[in-house]
Image 1: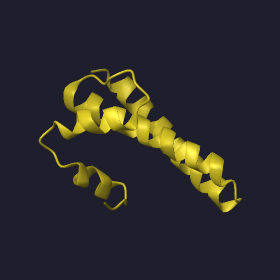
Image 2: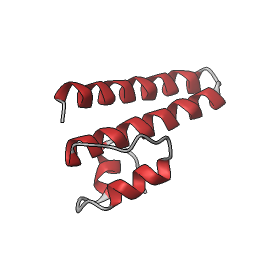
Image 3: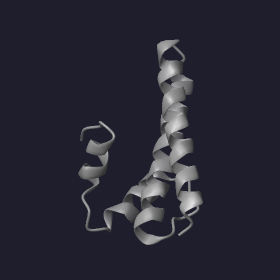
Length: 86
């Protein structure tokens, strides 16, 4: 795993989330939702890269969640880290 690649994914994910918050405040909900989806894709890829040294080249949240769910760590633990609830 490349530490630089993992950190780039994490930073980009956080930027998408911050952008989503700003867009939401301005009432641009469709663009905010798009940015949240981008955040989800990148943060899931980040976790996969950190845990298994690779991630699939896909945009499917379901595929990324399925891949992450095969790991022993609970997906709920990841969501709690980022203040989300399930």
